[in-house]
Each structure stands twice: as C-alpha cells, then as structure tokens.
Amino acid sequence: MMALFLWGKLRYDLVAMLALLAALALGVVKPADAFKGFSDDIVIIVGSALVLSGAVQRSGVIERAMLFLQHHVTRVRSQLLLLAASVGFASALVKNIGALAMMMPVAIQMAKRSNTNAAVFLMPMSFASLLGGLVTLIGTSPNIIVSRVREEMIGTPFHMFDYAPVGLGLTLVGLVFLRFGYRLLPRDRRAPLTAGEALEGQDFVTEAAIPANSVAIGETVAAFRKRHDGEVAVTAILRDGERRKGTHNARLHEGDVLILQGAPDDLDRAIAHDGLLLEGQHRDAATAAGGESGVIEAVISADSPLVGRTAGRLGLHEQFGVNLIAVSRQGTRLDKRLGEIRLRAGDVIVLQGAFDLLFERLAEFRCLPLAERTIRLGSARKTVLPLAILALAMAATATGLVPVAIAFFGAAALVMVTGALPVREAYAHIEWPILIMLGALIPVSDSLHQTGVTDIAGTWLGHVAATLPPWGAVALVLAAAMAVTPFLNNAATVLVMAPIAASFATNLHYRPDAFLMATAVGAGCDFLTPIGHQCNTLVMGAGGYRFGDYARLGAPLSLLVLLVGTPLILWVWPVR
Image (cartoon, rainbow, N blue to C red; front, side):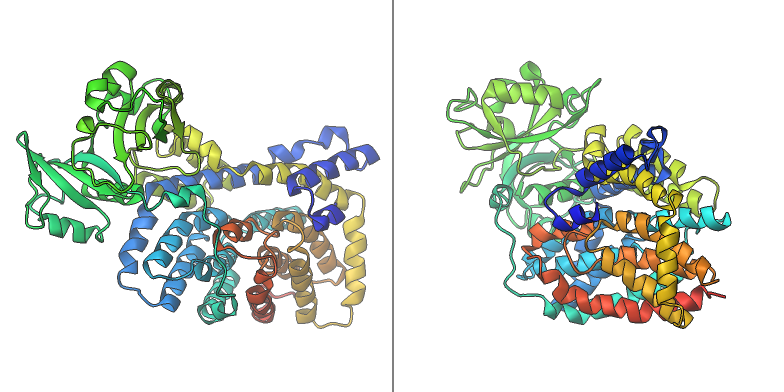
C-alpha cells in the first residue's frame, strides 16, 4: 500500500480500496469487518464539515469582510499576513480545506487588484490552513483520529480545545515565518489561463429595483459606484416609466429600476449588500416549487431561435418558465432593459429557473452551457444562517452536549433543509475520494493493531530511542510523522502512526498524550509536497506551482515546527 502511495500513479482512494481487498484476501481483515470504516464517525464528520464549509462559503460573509479590509491593507506582505491569518484561524473552526476554498477567490481577486502574482499568496495560505487545523478537534481529520486512539487507550478522548495551546503556538510562529519567508517562492509561477478565466473580464448587464429599505436610497450614481469600488456601473435609471442616463450626479430614489453593468461576482455583491431586487427573482421560476432551482450561464449559438428577438417578446417566463437575469455582449455597453435587448449570436446569457427545466430549455434554444465556471448572480443567499448553524454545532460539541459526529451531521442537514446550501451544491462540496479512502483504510489500520504490527514497530522505535531523553523521543515521533505524511494522505498517516506512537509510549513507560499530540501535529504538517494534503493539491493549479516549489518554502517551515513543537508539546503534555 505504501509503495503504491509513493509510486503516485494510482489515486489514493483506489490504493486504499486495493489495500482493503488485499487484507481481505490474506485474511488479515475479516469479511464482517470489511466495511465498518464507512460507518465510522470520522467519515461522517469530514463529510459534514465540507458541507458546512460550502454553506459558509456560499453566504459570502467572509468574502465581504475581506473585501472591506483590503482597502486598508495595501502592502503585499501585509496582505499576505492578513490572508494567511484569516485562513489559519478559520481553519480552527471549519475543515481546513473548506476554509482555504472560501478564501482562495478573495486572494486571487486581491492579487489582481494589487497587480501581484497570486502564487505569492496561495501556498502560504495553504500552509497556514494546515497550521490552523491543529488548533481544534475538528480543524483537521488527524486530530479526530488521534482523539479516538486516546479514548481506546485510556478511556478519555481529546476534547475540542485540548489541541489549542500547541496549535495556536505553532500557528503564530508559522505566520511570522510566512510573513517573511514567502520570498523563497519562485516569482515566475502563474496558473494557465482557463476558458472560464478568459471570460472573467466580460461584463454583464442586469436589472434591479431599489426597495424601501435599501442603503442606496438618496445616493448619487457616483457615490454608489465608489461604494462598490468602481466595479459596478449604473448605465441607466428607469423612473416612472421614463429612462434617465446614469450620470454621476443623478440621485437614486426608492422604486428606481437600475440597469447595472459589471462582472457577475461584483454585481452579485452589490445587489446582495444593497438589498436590491433582481429582475425576475419574485417570479415562480426563481423558486421552482417541487425541484431545485438555480442559475446557468450559456452562449447563444448562430442557429439559436433567440437570435434577433427580445426576451420580452419571447415571453421567456410566461411561455418557457425561465427568467433572463443578465446578458453580456463583448465590446458593447448595453443600457436597455433586459426585456428590450435584441439578442445576438455570441451573447452570453444567464437564465434562472428549475435545473431540470433549464437544461431542457438550453437544448430547445440551442444555447451552449458554460461549464467552465459557475456564477452566483440570481442565487438566493442567506448570509447569517450558515454561520449561526455552524456556531450552534461548535457550541454543542465544545460543551459536550452532543458528540461531534451528530452535531455536524445535524448542522449539515440543517443548512440543506433551510436552503442555505442547495442539496445539489452540498453533494458537490463533499470530497468523495477522501471519504472512500477513510472508509477503506480504517479496517486496514485496525488490522495493524490486531495482528501485533504496531507493537513490533513501537518496540523497534523504543529500542532506537531507549537512550534518548523524553524530548528526543517526542521529537522522533514528530519527525517520523512529518516524514511519512508527504507520501501518504495525512489521514492515512495518522491511521498508521497513531497506534504505533501509543505502543511506543507504553514501551518507554511514558504517558501517551505527548506522543499522540506529536503524531497529530506531524501528520497535519505536510509542507514538502502537493500530494500529502488536499490543501496543497488545491492551490497547485491555481498558483501554477511545480512539485519542487513546496520544499523551497516548506522545508524550513517543517524544521521550525520540529524545533518549536517539541518543547511546546512537552510543556503542555508532560510525559511523566
């Protein structure tokens, strides 16, 4: 199994499945125990945490907060520290890969506005997410696995914030290092341009009304645009049936219909922040009773029946059950209402409605869906609800009222039931290969203990460290876990190493806590390769990194964790 992981030609979930099959064939794992890993709490916690992270990401709260802060933080090093610290501390509350996924779009946008290469931010953010995941029980899956091993040994698991003293110390030291050490990264790394990114500069036109409670009431067009960073333009104002130009001094009134132009994400933020009523969002197609609804982006082909016709005359909602909520035409400034725009071949349109119906209509309209990217414009967002549900789950686990698995499973169900995250998106946020690997490796890992392998390895390590002082023994376990995790998935590393570390501590007549904590820290700190942890894999393409780039920044950080982590672990968790 380890040889296949090192070879790297097979995916880690497939390797785990083959390992389970081999263990069954050899009789090491009994058929009755083959699939017990899939009912393990770890699988439920990891999957639920990814769903919750997706709901928080969709709410846009963190994104808006970061956009506000970036106006006051303009230097690259300060921006890097802000991004890394935000990801690091968010990783203590949600799964670290979810925290990183939330913040990556913000980092890329911040890099563009600062005329900086995004590669400067992304790898340090990934490393910060790994460090931040060490702070709490649910920050990263190794902590959960190590907690279970402790419960099996002494009857008491690690609790939610038992990891905090060591995790916070290492996170703070790591942030200071990343603040200066980012210069070790090559400056010429850039992600290849994708089809979706090629369309990013393309502005859309949409239509939104100003309701009674909007903060835009009384503002001039210039003030409105400035408040939205100049990213959203008011091309026209419709008031009492008359069209007015969106001049700088024009003042906005309640009931005005604004023709807005900008990038989809910028339009989405402006409409959500100001409480504007997007064209068509009140119609039945937007809520699609009995089915999932959403938005889809498509290009009008040359032979489409939409060419040369307006949405108003087509009656898209009345006859076809979908809403047109935005249009983009390359190189053209559109200032008409959506229903009055005469569509052309090559126009990019955004339609809203029930998903099943949307795909039918695209085929009927002979439009090509843009699968390269997704947009949020027109998707209902509940900003506070996901955070409230997550806070409730965190409080329930921190106080011990509810087990972690039940709290997070219940919270994941709540965000779907309340509509904070549509079911379709929830399943898309779950990383199924990770769950398959966990479910397959748990019985394989258990077999190491049942067959006595962990006792043999622990005895061998005990002989090696017999003459070492306690700090040397803890450092040995920490270094061993850090050495293995670049080549295995971090969860796989701790499934193998935690029982060995526990046996190792028993043979030396030490308390197991420091050794289990060293295993968790070592397994959570893969700074050397893009394959040992999914966070590193996530930023590889977006940052344009090469395999060897990780060690340039990661090797000195690994040494720092070893030098600082060993005395910190012993100070918090004495071995005697």
